[in-house]
Picture (tube, rainbow, N blue to C red):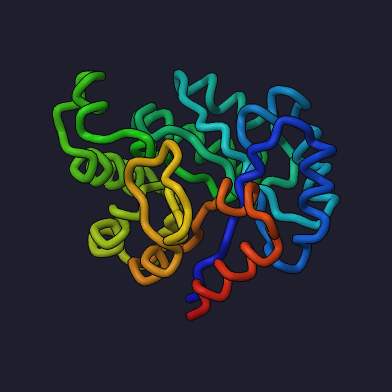
Length: 230
């Protein structure tokens, strides 16, 4: 299995983003659209990036009561998003309702459960009343999600070996917090290089600023894909 690269398009303007992405066609298949762009331009922005030739990972991290999350997913009916995130902290019933809604409204979409945000470390978890270490909390939420039928998870690359061991090879593991050796950490606390994440069992890695801020984004993306292929 070759780990795939997803570019996090964390840019404010969609036209700037489209211009940035144009030369990357062929270098990567997936782009991640987050809350900022989705809220600014609305659901139609998913269609625009799909029409530009990219598969869309819609990273909304839905987290609400079960009926609201299910209704939100149904409101995306027919949108060409290949992946969509929800928070596993919403609980088993919320995840089951989300799975049912996605099966009806977005049958081609891989629903991903977010475990612990990669910006969170043990101290920050304790600050919100979670006494468990990040790894333990991720494992608990991942098993809960898998038990509801979720087919994909978002986790830090540091949790990859444990989740692969506990959940097997069938579940998709999507990992942000990826930084090439020459990149800065920015606001990520739990990171790996692309090669380390691939070796640990990542299905997809999410990379943003190391490509977005590169002097030559095409070369930066190509170098990451080459590292993954090795």
